[in-house]
Length: 395
Image 1: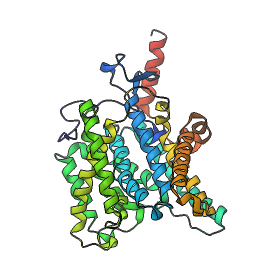
Image 2: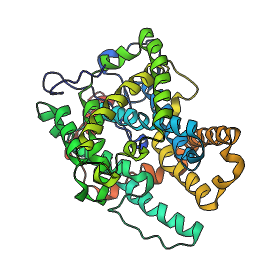
Image 3: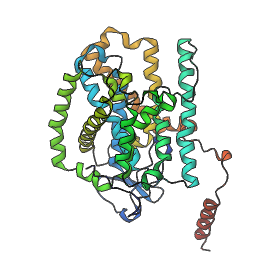
Image 4: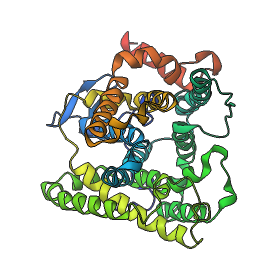
């Protein structure tokens, strides 16, 4: 599945997906030459393409796992089984989401309209939510948390990372061996504790190989994991992963899966950083492939929610933090099996609601601001619009 092309974009023209600032990754659309009705495709959308239900389903399911994982954090210390499941989920849910982000960033370049979408759909939401989270904590707890745009707070690290990754996309298209280079940078980051916390660069670098791998992938790579044989094989693989996760709970530091610290900061010898980077990436890709194998290919009731995953991602953090600040997770009943199941279902339901269109309409001002006043008019874009108008009137 993960056979990376050495230099994407040089020997073939990349697919032209339309970018969608609302969900952190461009809107998945089929190329014009492939716009024929096929099973598993969503209905036609404006813009001349079709959304691929598979990718929308994958994004929604991945964001549900993210919300569940955050809800499990206050509870996992009392349950070895829950912490084992937590470890397995954390090994692939963000890699899967980042890989899709890279796949649909292949056409990104420095064209003004794409830079504008990057600013309004990623940079501006980062500033707003990086400000909102500490203010929310101050309002709920009465504390005096400072606002710092250089130190990503809680979930906002992903916006910083996505901004950097997408901005460097032309570089990864240019170099001959993008994935080995990105992997080398990730390995070096794990032995460099003095990188510090500014812009969460440890995470930016350690998750970078997944984004670059997505840039190098082709549609046929995703077709490989959608085979029935892969779906069947993924069942024992996931079972083995859960067993290993349960075994590793008292033997391994879960913080390795966060990719936010160097080996030295985790109390491990420096050489373990590169080794763990390679080992964890191998495990993550295997489990990501198994996850993709079970993602539905047809249009489901939750497919449309895949377009609002960034809304669910950024907004569910307020609910998790509110429960943490108010001590809701300290209730003894929630630390029992039935309580853990209830928290899991509540997290899934909450993030599902936050991905819906009514929520998107309410928070679009923060997630997808147009900000026409902030940008110069693009002469090329204006010329294209004038040409479209002429074509409409038959000129």
